[in-house]
Every structure is written in C-alpha cells, then in structure tokens.
Length: 369
Image 1 (cartoon, rainbow, N blue to C red):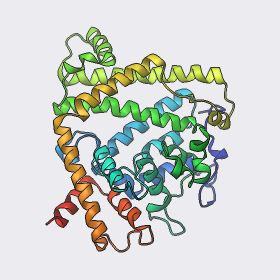
Image 2: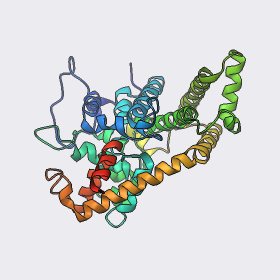
Image 3: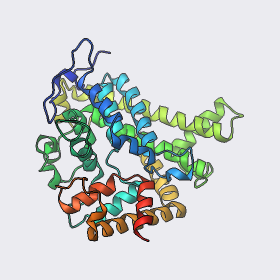
Image 4: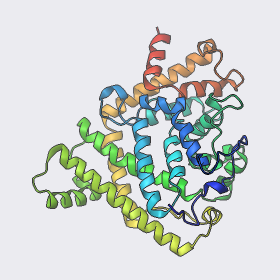
C-alpha cells in the first residue's frame, strides 16, 4: 500500500537507542515490523495474558485480559490505518506495546503503586511501558530492552509528567513544547479507547453487572440497537449484544476516519514533521466525542464503580500496598539478579509492576503468612 506523505515512513525513522544494521530491503523486515516482532516475543507481552482488564483472569474464561485487549486495539488500529494510508506496521507495534508496563489488577494496581511511590518519583504506566522496552527486557547480548524505533517508543509514551519528560531527551520534547506525536501514535490511542469502551460493555453484560436495559440511557447504544432490531427483528440475547457492539465500533471507526480526513484537508500536512507541529489531527467529530464520553461516563458509574468491582479494587490495592511494604523492609525477598543496580524504590516498583495477577496473589499469600 502506498503511504500518505504525512504517514511515518520506515525508511525515514529517527532510529534506535543502539544503532543496528537494517535488514536487506528486498527480503527483510522494515524497522517497524522488527519492532512488532520483538514486542510479540517479549516476556512482558506474554504476561499480559494474566493481567486484569476489568475482571480478574480467573473470574471467567471469556473476559478480556490485557493481552486480548491489546490484540483488539491492534486490529482496530490497522483497519483505520489502511483507510487513512498510514503505516499499519507502526500502528500495530504501538498497539501491542501500549500496556506492557501495566501493573497487575488493572487501574486499581496502578493507582495503588503510584500511592506507594508518591515520595519516590511516582508511577506512570505509560512511562513503565517505555522502561520495559528500553531497559527491563533482557533478551539481547548487546543491550538491555528491545531497542525499538523512536516512532514506536514515541507512541508508547501517550502521557508523561513534565518532570519525567525533562529526563527523556528528544522523546520527551513534545510534552514540553506542546507538540503532537505521529498520526500512527494518535491512532493507537483512539483505537485503545474504541476497544476498551465497547469491550468493557460486552464483558459487563456477560458478567451480569450491567444490563441491556440500563444501556437505554446511552445514546450510541440505543441508536445502534434500534438499527439492528430493524434489520434483524427476531434477534435477541447474546447475538443481539454482539451485533449492537459491532455496529457501535463501525460508526466510531467511520466517524474517526471522516473527521480525520476533514482535519487533514484543513491543515494539509506534507510530512510527519508537519503532523507533529499541528494540533491533533486524528480524532472524533464533536458530536461523536460527546456520545463516546457519555458511554464512558455510563461505564464509570455502572461498571467500574459497581460494588463487586470496587471490592476487587480494594483487595488489589491491599495486595499492592502490602507487597511494597514487605519488599521495603525485606529487599532480600526480591530475586538478587533483578535490577540490582536500580535505585531502591524504583527497583521495588519495577518488580511489582511486572507481576501478573496470579503471581502477585501468590507472593501476597506466601509473604503474609
């Protein structure tokens, strides 16, 4: 596929932390394809299978995990990238890597670890994902991390505090200057939102914590449910839910493409540098943004703050806080070969963040005896 002038072209990459020879152009992979493959083969990527999205891995065989969520983000991202003539390989690499630094127990674990680290630099899961691919993976003879391309690393770092951005050199400049990342990075971020909003609704209904009747207050749901019922008047149950969610994803994607095309026409970027110097060029229309925000508010009110989910959140926070306190007092409980040269509290943070839900539970049960 021919890439647009404003896309990220692999032959114009800003390079890697550690220079490497390129693979032969006729038979080898592009830099972004190499990034994707390294991510898929990483230990951190495999661990995502046992990290919470909303529901714990052991609560049901069909609920999303961080791994399945990342795959769904990559699928949506690639589909949109093709329509906009963006670099699909880069979108896929960013999508697959965006949650590598997530803690066990989802956002509850992240918030708890940030509280533990409040006097020691805090915890940002996007920055943790960058640390994973830059330093924490140990797979190569010549350097730590995965040595990914600048453009993939740029996309992984969706958010960053000014204090941390100042330490990241060129990668942190856009947070200090108010610039944008590549369109591929902007797309991965939007694909993430499309995936988790719709699939959290799916998992919420499957779990019984939210109902189809409750969703009547969500405009996007009601509009697409009406269309599905007009087309398939006898559809019900699980098939109806899946068809409505499929329609919602379609209208979100279609709006995203059309609004992005409108912004691209207005600003006419001629290169990725123009994209970085422009306001956000990839996004939803104001009407669709309003409806997507309404759906997100519904999820916060009815799913994420449901008593059953809140109970899990409280348990998760207790486990993270307890593990942190134990390792603080008994650092010998951390394997000796795990990041021995890191600053003490950051070493603890890295260790806990890398755990799966079940390993964190196992450590908690073992150490609290």
